[in-house]
Length: 185
Image (cartoon, rainbow, N blue to C red; front, side):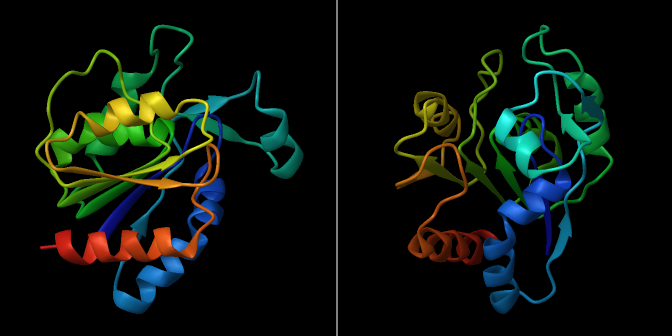
């Protein structure tokens, strides 16, 4: 099984790998042959990096598109991701979930998991791929995550007690593993 992991705005594949470490270890027990594809986005971020990201991690940082500049770079990112197929599943965090929304109709994975995802406001296509949405109850962009969830016809939402982060509760990860198990074929 091949799973594509898409990092958030102004982070990196290294950060996504760290964020998803517990989930990837749990999945490895159930599916030891998972091939993870976790690329850096094609655009390097050099300005206005989140202070918490800069304090914890070393550059370089990347983004899939520049949301403050008319979604500049989006087409290049789509072309970049198209070359990574075939993919069985996509797990996207924040801006990575937005990219999962856009690229899923092209790559046609068996499932999508959005973690604190943001919707692409210009994309109104209803997607018929099973989707699990993990949303923090304290996330300041929770409504955008719920809007993204509504773009999938076969969508489920799980709320966690955190903010704009991977979930802190073990039970949420167990539900993610169960979701993947039920949608991998």
